[in-house]
Amino acid sequence: MAGMSPLFHRKPAQPQPPEHSEHSENHLVTLIRKPGCHLCDDAQLVVEKVCAELGVPWEGKDITEDRHLHDQYWEQIPVVLVDGRQHTFWRVNEERLRKALTDQYK
Figure 1 (tube, one colour):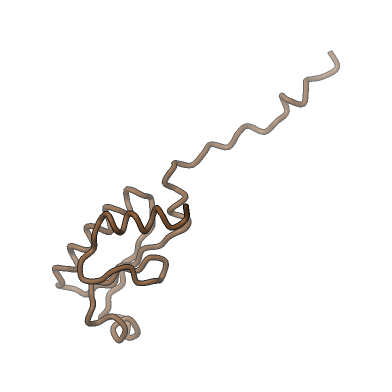
Figure 2 (cartoon, rainbow, N blue to C red; figure 1 turned 30 degrees about the horizontal axis):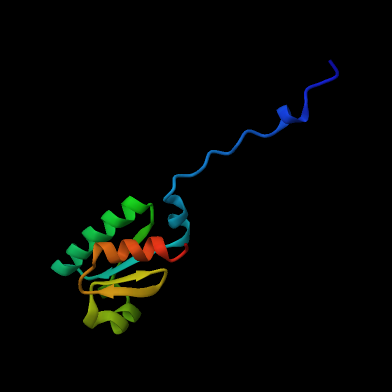
């Protein structure tokens, strides 16, 4: 036998990432909040749940520690940004946030 067919020299297939991982690379959710805010606590629960389900990273920012955020969003907190753009404020709708994170890049 002269050698193996080139078919056997291919690199192994790379494992496919989980279906939801495409969202984690495309999005970042930011929750702008302040300490002692019950609406902020409620919003964080929704953000944590949806982001965990979809594999999307999220960050929290304290409005009392950032003058720019304070000036821009003080009357609206909690505020949720998706990819740096305002998504919602005061109350976070779980289904609306999920839709924003899954439909935008289809």
